[in-house]
Amino acid sequence: MIRLLLRVLGHDYARPVRRTIGLMTAASVAEGLAYALLIPVLRALLDDRPADARPWLAGLGAAVAVYAVLRYRSDLAGFRVGTTMLRGMYRRLGDQLARLPLGWYGAGRVGDVSILAGRGVLQAMSVIAHLLAPFVSACVTPLTIVVILLVFHWQLGVAALLAAPVVAAIQARVGRATAAADAESAARDRKAAQRVVEYLQAQPVLRAGGRTAERFALLDDALRDVQLASRRSTVLTLPGAVGLALVVQTMFTAVLALGAALALGGTIGAADVLIALVLAARCADPLLSLTELGGRLRGARTELTRLDTILSTPPLPEASDPIRPDRHDLEFVSVSFRHGSRTVVDDLSLAVPEGQRLAIVGPSGAGKSTILQLLARFYDVDAGSVRVGGVDVRAISTEELMARIAIVFQDVYLFDGTIEENVRLGRPDADDAALRAAAAAARLDEVVDRLPDGWATNVGEGGALLSGGERQRVSIARALLKDAPIVLLDEVTSALDPVNEAAVGEGIERLMAGRTVVIVAHRMRTVRRADRIVFADGGRIVESGSHEELLHHGGRYADFWTLSLTAPAA
Ligand SMILES: Nc1ncnc2c1ncn2[C@@H]1O[C@H](COP(=O)(O)OP(=O)(O)OP(=O)(O)O)[C@@H](O)[C@H]1O
Image (cartoon, rainbow, N blue to C red):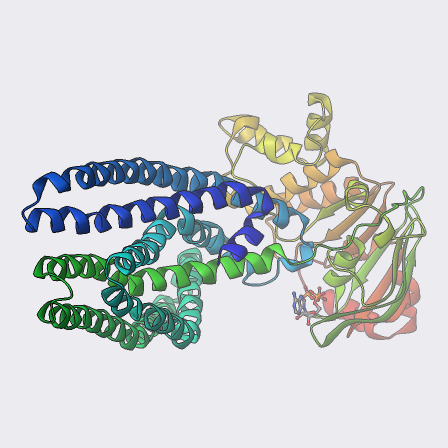
């Protein structure tokens, strides 16, 4: 567990963690010692030798004082290390999320990671802040008491010690028996949390479609699953809890019976039996708490394992000796790419000369967006090569590649900040004149003028306070400000109102001017203006040429064109 914790946190934390565990162990030993010193104290008092009790009482007082100091320091250290780790953990997770290939952020991932980053990290970090001290105390304090009991009365000590392997075996068995149920319970928990997020986010769609009850039923099912899984997990821990209670009671009875027998045989006095019972009772409480602590530690372990999986996911390899391309023509050379076992791009070759526009059209699922993603190296190809300026994208540093490419996606994501902050993301050091020029070219200036706080208007989470067309304009302005030589565009499919439609179209035209462009095109006007058009299907290019050539050819593109003439957006 500690090894897993350190792997997740990074070995910078090894020293403070070990020191904290050392302090916790020392505090527990001191606690055990304090209890064990009751033996000579009580023995002297019950044997009517109060003077003999004095040095032991002083020792007891010292042990209690040492225990109090160590407990305070270990609790403080646990809390401090826990909170420092929490910050460190968020930083590590943040760094790793920034290095993971963009393709990693697939369906379900965002919800999953946000739940992990919230509840999961806290639960994992609670190990050191809250769980470890009681766990160490529950193990070490009884062991110390038993060891001292061994010194004073080896027979009673052996009787108590016999419980130790049985307690350890029960703990291990409960852990094994509940591992699958715990994992299932955690998975159901995550599923339910995702359903809650989905249910909340999808309210407008659900209400418009009159599907609120139906979707709530799904959420309800997920919550019932959580309940069932958690009940199953609890039921599976019951034999362990009962077994542990039995072992502890048996130990107690064995110590009592053995003590009585020894006292009757005259080996020890009645006072010693009483003392042994007091100590055995003191061992019982922490041992019994092991069941609950074990369950919580296992829960934290599940979250740590999930964190470890993310942290050990390799980012796309960076070239050790990166090359800077000095041109911006684009090329796919016999590229194949799979999502799992499914081939999405199949032995595809194409070239876009510098400064030209390539439009990709084709049916849904043809692999059009994937072609854009491979150009921006969201994923690495399985075969072949994607080249920018004749250089394989794998040989270009990610930073350099990203600096050369501006991407405008269909789904624009805006950060919860001002319009200005959102546009400046394109080039944070841009001066005001460049910002205004980009805004004017994207016709965002009209939007800014209309808004009450102008550039300082907050766009809300995900840009929710702006319309779809306005968000598009922000995203185009952002790309214009970036002023990258390559532009990758996934044209918006949803219909915009005529004003936004014209503004977005104009903005896109300006963005494309003089740059090397690959556009997944849906508006026939955009397609027509491309230097070359490829018609993709099944991850392959089935037709390629200019608009006129392809119409003349009378194939798939010609059909597509004819069909689009009836669509209003064409
Ligand atoms: N992360 C993913 N995991 C698995 N399959 C995926 C993933 N992303 C895309 N696919 C699949 O790859 C295929 C190509 O997807 P892509 O988005 O490139 O198609 P497209 O031509 O852009 O479609 P559309 O026009 O509908 O956006 C689709 O069948 C899609 O289901």
